[in-house]
Image (cartoon, rainbow, N blue to C red; front, side):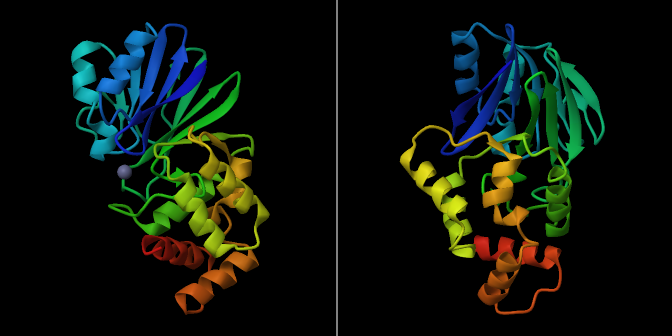
Amino acid sequence: MTITPIKAFNDNYIWIVQSGNQAACIDPGEHEPVLAFLIHNRLMLAQTWITHHHHDHCGGILPLKRVYMSSPVYGASDIEEATHTVEAGNQFSFGDGLVTVWATPGHTAHHVSYLLENADGLHVFCGDTVFSAGCGRVFTGTVEELFDSFNRLNQLPESTLFYPAHEYTASNLRFAAHIEPDNADIQTALNAALQQDAPTLPVTLAHERAVNPFFRVGLPQVWSRAETLCGRKLHSELEVFAALRELKNTF
Ligand SMILES: [Zn+2]
């Protein structure tokens, strides 16, 4: 199985999982680059997995459906174009892999992630929940939900690979460096992100634990820095997480 990002819009990635001549497509916000990739690589679109209802994740579903009419579209109850409504715990197969649906609300109320387990390990298509060194904004979900989603994802093995839907890595790392100026891993990752034109994704959970402030809210240096920057005492990891999210909104 190979997993490839297709660039869309300014900074979206549409991930393609390939098994033989079959492809699964995650969050096709637009259809042209997906069609071009499928045709160029002689692939059939076998499945589409949708993480949440935003247009930059769903806009290409119907045009693709017109070409690949029998291919199922998996999505939560708020995805109108879904042919297969999914909820937490549902499983289906793709190639020799098993896909498990996790509820990861916060960015939106019905956001889900797809955990693909195959011979290469565990791959999480997390949409706009986890970004490298950052997290999604809170739209129709709540910051409490987003915090819970992070905690659940953080229980996965550290070799788990995350495939976020946006290339926000460099700007997120600038914010991470603002929170932890002395964190050498963040500086190294920022320098690498600035120097490369290629996608910085996927990333391992181990890497995110080292550089992503939203996975590091329990650490004393992150906690006290968040208190300093937001100018008030914070009483829980959730409050630190929420304060960081607010600080990032205006960074
Ligand atoms: Zn979104």
